[in-house]
Structure formats: structure tokens, C-alpha cells
Image 1 (cartoon, one colour):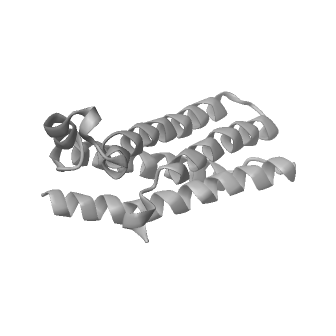
Image 2 (image 1 turned 180 degrees about the vertical axis):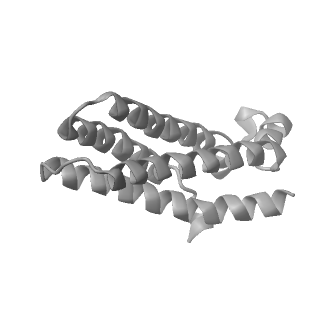
Image 3 (image 1 turned 30 degrees about the vertical axis):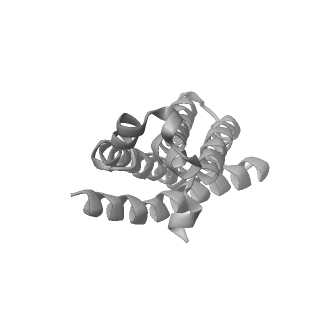
Length: 144
């Protein structure tokens, strides 16, 4: 089960990263270009929200079945983790939760705006914050 979940989490991350980049760029370009908010913009923001939530759920399950997550902290304590173990057991999950929270807040706030410019502004700020958080804690040595 662990190896299957890890594989799904790893490959789904490419889709999440792609969608968060598309969502952020879409919002930034249309905010600065003073474009109107259309159905495709709503779909992009919604799909970004959905794939990031699925990634979070897979990651949370993986956190409890993986030997590198909660089990590692239980066995070694926080002081017994090296930097890479700390990245996998603490930093990656915590920052992932923050990133998904930022994306969720941005999506929720944009729905309350009535005009295009504020919708794109909220999406641009929160989706870009989520993107930066995601990029900061990807375990690049495992990914590349």
C-alpha cells in the first residue's frame, strides 16, 4: 500500500504543480491585462482547487502509512531526525497544508467578489502564495 500511495502522490504532484502554475499565471495575466472573468477562469481555479485537495488527502494518508512520516517521528523523536527526514516528516506536510489552505482561501474569497479585477487579484495573490509554498518544500532530490 505504501509504495502505491507514494507513486500516486509523486505523479499527482506533477498535475498539481502544473495546475497551480496555470491558475496563478491565468490570474496574474488577466489581472494585469484588465480582462473579464469568464467560465474558463472559474473552471481553471476550481480544477486547481480540486487537484490540490486530492493531493493533500493522498499526502495525509501517506503520512501515516509511510516509514518517513509519523512513524519516523514516533521512533526517533523530533531531535533524532536528520535534515532530510525532517523535510519529509515535518516541513513537507506542514507547508503542503499551508499551500492548500492558501489555495482554498483564494478560491473562497474570489467567489464573493462581484467584478473581474478583484476576482483575479484574490486568485493571483493566494494561488501564487500556494505555488511558492509548494515549490519551497518539494523534496527535489526525490523528484528529479
